[in-house]
Image (cartoon, rainbow, N blue to C red; front, side):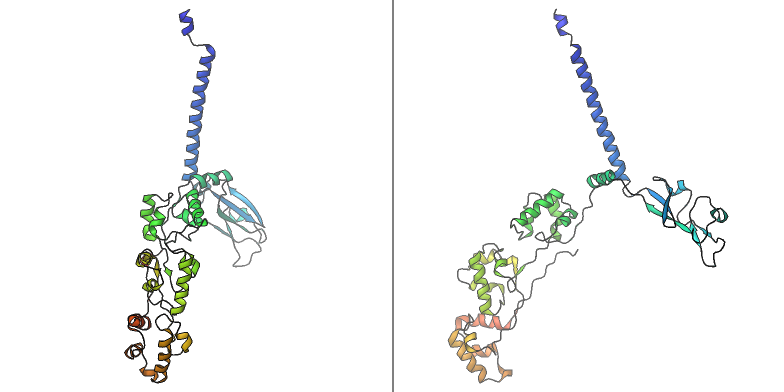
Length: 344
């Protein structure tokens, strides 16, 4: 009885054999699939060729798909120049018809045609295989991670899902302020960032051109300070140097240090100190009402060629605590910073 119990049942044996054949069949199918994919991908740059004979608006395939030029019995550039009966001098037909002589061709001027070499059209299945399995060409070119398109992100080496993830972050209001911010994205591998870091180009914010909405993208700047930055710029007639931001109430050194590498200062328009009326001059942070009245008197009693910011200081018109700022504001201009990142 014990030996009979130890013998596997016939149904178990059949099931085990069926499972074995199923596994073998599955592995075989995978092998065939891989081989077929590799074959299609390997032929991506060597497509099949067809030769199409064009005559009277009709196209006749003269060589089947998969035939090479050698198999077709001709090399590129071979031709037959035929002058049929009734054709005038200079008229000719170019023919690649296999083995046909001028007499055998027997073409009239109306029947004249030519053979054209074309790439064979791939099937839809082959195109899908190529799209899915072909190795992607990875490129490196200059880009701004805040504006680069999803298509260009894929050109840079990101998968479709990774590119969509970066774009989704931006759509939700995310901003890459520095190169390092892009590296912190979970879809950007360290090796990818090391390759792309020299090509990342994030333009600095020009404090003389930005609006309040643009200022809010800076770290530590909310709506309150954004509005104050625009208002102070208007009073100054344009920032002359970035450090002037610290003249705004409660805009301290810590706040400035947190964003100074993200901003630039383009040269403002010359302040019209010699033409503005007294009430407009009084609005300037370094002048005020009393100094504005004195400046009007100074320019009315000084020849144009002798007027200068230094002359106003020597005349004691500007308070001593503002003298240095005043001279720097009216005698210097800021140049925009340059970005040494490599060109595309």
